[in-house]
Length: 92
Image (spheres, rainbow, N blue to C red):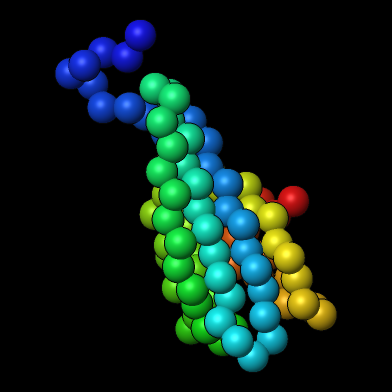
């Protein structure tokens, strides 16, 4: 049982990325905690270098390595994989 004085710790995180070529990428990040709770956040980023930097920064802020899956359009997965890896995560 979780200690009431100690906040729940994150045990893993996953991100789903719906990639686009000219539209914004849609990202959902689900964090799983040791007390059985979950937290879901959603955001979008532009398909630009600045957007990929924003994606890396958001994923790097998650206090656990992120495993990402992507629904790619064309070769968009490659730049997204680099952004995820830059954040310390991995693409599956």
